Length: 126
Image (cartoon, rainbow, N blue to C red; front, side, top):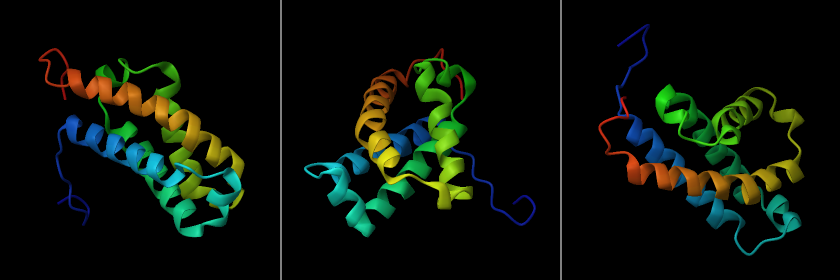
């Protein structure tokens, strides 16, 4: 325990699994919907925001050598969005959230899933 907070040491692969799981959930939340339907469904919208935060936090926890294997757009964007959702939630644009959820998250999912397939390689250190 550190400063009253439990510190759990986790493998970077578990953070990658968190990222992939949240990206898949976002895909299910947006599938078959229009932006209007998505924004009108508060539960789906809020669930997507939560999962975007998980993705951003997971990205922050990946080691630098693993991050370097992702395309540049996938490295800092999710972490910055996580901070925006957490600290500037009042400034969120629902249409930008939709764009991220339907365009950027599927691309990140593809890259993260490919990386997960390579995750057992010994040259990637935690």
